[in-house]
Amino acid sequence: MSASGNEPKKWELGPESEYRFELDPGTSLAIKLVQGQAEIFGFELAEGKAYLFGFECKAALFTWRGCVIEVTGDPSTDYVSDETPMRIYANLHLALEQMRVRALRSIRGSPVPAHERPGPSDPPRVLVLGPEHAGKTTLCKLLVNYATRSGQGWVPFLVNVDPSEGGWAAPGTLSVAPVLGPIPTASPANPLGTAATTAPVALAANALVPLVYWYGHAETKRNPLLMDRLIRNVGENVMDRFEQDNIGRASGLIVDTPSSFASGPSSNTHRQKLIKACIDAFRINMILVVGHDKLSVEMQRTYGSLMSVVKIPKSGGVVEVDYAYRERVHNYELHTYMYGQVIRSPPGITNGSFGGENIADLVLSPSSTVINFTDLQIYRIGSDAMAPSDALPVGAVRTVSEMQPVLVDPASPGSGLLNAVLALLSPFNPDENERYDEEILDLPVIGFLIVTNIDIPKRKMTILAPNRGSFIGKTAVVGSFEWQDQ
Image 1 (tube, rainbow, N blue to C red):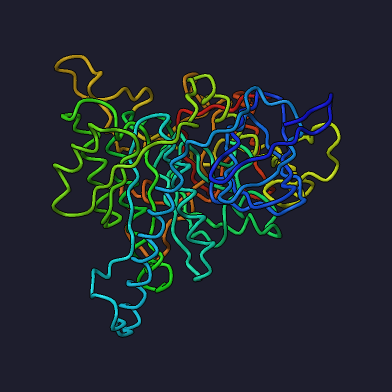
Image 2: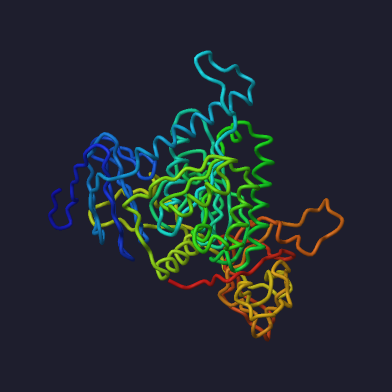
């Protein structure tokens, strides 16, 4: 390694080692591959191109054969380690690849080669479990990226059931998308890449079109009944898609889960029920437990006779983050959804790219629109202050069901709408003659809005949206996330 002032630092990495870095708020980093081969969570870097990282990104560049990189910027932490679980992760990828090949052969009715023993023909449908700071999302991204890079035309489905993660949309959502190409890593504001719905579709990295449902909170225990229903909604849509998409079905799916699925006593019923909901909804046939012995034993005892339960180590590069960091990331995600994402290049870098794409194309101009209170129907799911069921006083009974949509009056002093994030729902199904009370729980999200001002005397409110459009007759749902100006 060498450095001089603002000059780039040169790092030489040996085979199967990785360069790990962490960024402070307001700083950025550029990495250029000078020689060799390198990847970031399965996304391969092109030689000679400067890749930008920002918004407190914490990541690692790995090389199988060795490489030379130039790093420009001032990370709060950076170092090289040759202790990685990458060989185990690669072997896991190969096992999933064999499952995909057998599944596609079965779907097409192709004969089994004479030298190969007949085996199960199910595609990989993988549930990834683990505690906080285990690197579950990183592992999911890596396995998906390896599948798309294998040259077999796979289109694996990546499912995010962690509402605190945000996925391709705003925090508070559950989502799924077929992944057509490797997902870059540049910022925690786009943990799974950028969706076509929130950025210019001309960008290859933005070809993802996710299906999104709104949960509205960061904690799964806030409303486990709603979580269960949304998980099953996502699963039903995925299985319907698989009926029409042979390549997608053979490619399989990988489900990223929140840390709450792994923590707490084994008798924690909401945790057990949500794991079971995932297994049922996505027809899981493999459970990966990352870095948690007790959970691995529990899953082996409960599901080991029905499917493969594999314990894998977590990477030593996983960074522990606090609540304040997660709050800032939620803020980054919301601002990125509205304004796009621009990572300022560190001094000396003039042609930096975001995931390999031109960063100038990632700027958006949201519109501010004044509407009448009656233009937009806004609901809240459950009571105004939905405490977890186990936090209610002894003998207390809810007056409002956890699943009941309650119409919110913007004129009410306690509406909680000012600076609230709203999920705009797709229209009701016109083919259905009868509405049912909880129908809005089953409608996917088509976008997100922010209430920036409420004028009660004039019965009007100001809405911030990524693009212009009429909200008359539309339906939205409010959760517990708030907009904060940066």
